[in-house]
Length: 240
Ligand code: FES
Image (cartoon, rainbow, N blue to C red; front, side, top):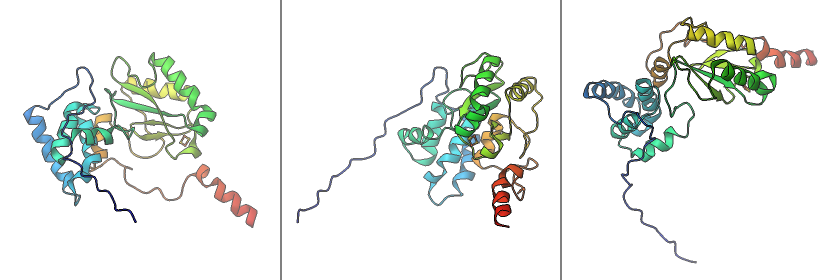
């Protein structure tokens, strides 16, 4: 039987790898770094291994800058003893971590199959025309960013639009236009379910794991709504 071959790897590379964007901060002022460090310590203390806190820390730095900046990457790297390359590899895997400046309201239009065929594609196209931006773009007033999102497991309410990750169900081209107009005018409507809207940066802080005191944010709503339960109801009627 042949002998196994062992390869010796060297030390982890310490190269700096960044998501470069012109104008993006590359370091935090001392006071900001101190505040973030205090927040990060709370999050890191929840895990037996500090590197496990990377996802919450990415949300934390996103709450500071509105997207993942070189400053945020350096902060996470230093706080968790990870290389910048390791932080970037995680940040670029998950689409909730943004690579460019984000408006006060991130409007995500689901264009996965069911939402797409029921109007998601038309809604995305219409919103971009209405706002004069391309998918992924932000309005000049900084209020609204529109992007294409994947299925958010709300297919029974398709087509779905999410604002800062809160649901707006059963949308139409007209209702979605009304929605972004309301957001731009500073009158954010209530989501169909869940908690009231807060800004994108405030949402990122909540996603980092800090207390969410909004009404409806953590309460269980019991059984699903009528569209969710329709299949089960049909089976029960067929069996009776
Ligand atoms: S396809 Fe849009 S929520 Fe599932």
